Amino acid sequence: MTGDKTIHDQLEHPTRVEGDLYARFARMAARHSVLFSAIALAWLWFSIAIWARWITLPDIPFLTDQQIATLGTVYNVGWWGFVRPRIEKLKKAHELSQDKTNG
Image (cartoon, rainbow, N blue to C red; front, side, top):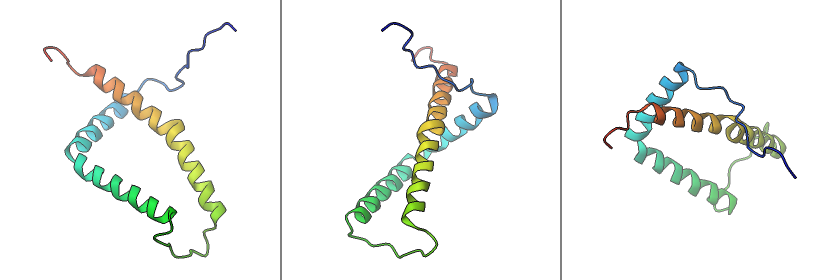
C-alpha cells in the first residue's frame, strides 16, 4: 500500500485573539495549578464513587439515561475532536513564539 499516511491538521493557524487568550489562560493555569489538580482529583473520586454505587444520585425526572449518554457523547466528540486539538495547536504556537535563547 502506497500513499501519504500523514495525518493532516484541518485546523487553521491560530489567530492573534486565540493566541492572546491562550497566553492568558496558560498564565492563570500555572498560577492555580494546585487548585485545578485538587478539582480534578475530587472529580475522579466522585466519578468512581458514583460508578461503584458508593454514592447514589437523586433521580432527575426530566433527564433520562439516554439523554445523559447522548450529552456525554456530544461532550466527548466536542472535546477530543475539536477543543483539545485546538488547544494543543495554540500551545505549540505559543511555545514557538516564546524566546528560548539562553535557556
